[in-house]
Image 1 (spheres, rainbow, N blue to C red):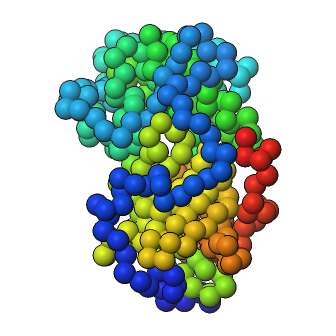
Image 2: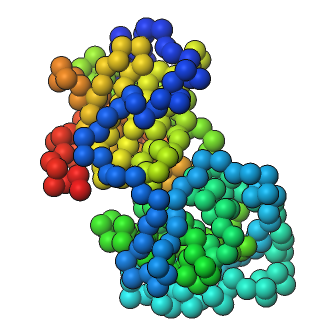
Length: 324
């Protein structure tokens, strides 16, 4: 049985959050990391550039805008590229001024929509001045994709975001893509835009048979779409920093000791608007560490043995060819 004693590597005094957040990118170095990109051009996009840069902050004007919620919004889903034209046609018909006349439809402040206000992709969506679209993997519980596109029109943004999502979904069996927001119109129910401000993270040390759960805070890595910093926090402040890359690599630094772990991570899908992921890493001494981010308490209890088991995905060291 796994005890709840704190691993020795985390017992020392931790650093204040304010002292290290600004240097987050310096705590972890991943060789051959993807170069910073400001723009993403999904395959087949009809627009010259589709801007989908995640955002960390919003101004008051962006937060004061309103979006239209409907009690029974249409489900606009493309399971593959062959179905994309029909999905885009349906989207163009569904997100129009006629939607305002649907019974129960109401305009709502964007700041009240968790996913738009809290997630980097949602924030980027709110910065759109012309065309914009937000797409999520479908089903969301097992398809960890969230793509935003800004373009000159809603049609172009919808096309770009859906194609970007479908490119990723092609490597995920059983996954398609759903358009959840377009222009000023939300195309999913309000509860599907939930976004947990903070999530729990469990750190498991198999060699010591110990586990500890922390609060955690996820932040974007500026200029690196898909890369994230996840701070692990206890009552005194940050305990460690986990960095995950879109190519599957992961690294972690323990603040008190400076111990560094490297390995891989896998995303399982959305839980309350946040992606749940598992990281499997090893330090220079060969000690393994399992880090579970964002799983619900009941899910962890029901699947504890499976989630706590050491790396079911293979070697924690990725070859360069696999990391590209």
